Length: 99
Image (cartoon, rainbow, N blue to C red; front, side, top):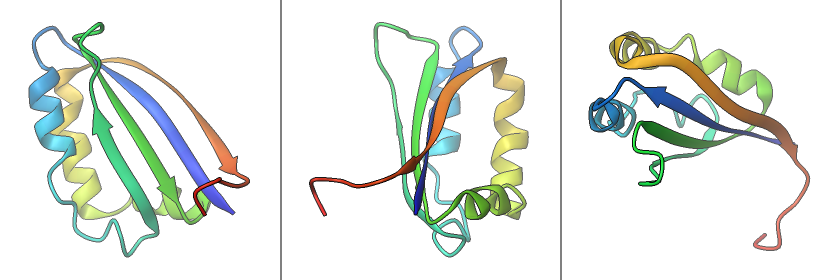
């Protein structure tokens, strides 16, 4: 079953673009770790928020990806730019009308 993680990251005022630039850079090993989709976006109605939508082969693949050197480096770089407020949902994908 495919695993989805859809979340939001609150940035410190004025830091949204810096966080975006970190999250959209290629991360070595992400695809090989089982990442099927990793989309990053914004909504101008909430200017200090970054949204992330991820699809993974499994919850285990998602957890294991957090140990990748490239992911650890991105987390370390982004953390000082975030407020610590994070939201979102995780769920098991049961189907899609596109597949």
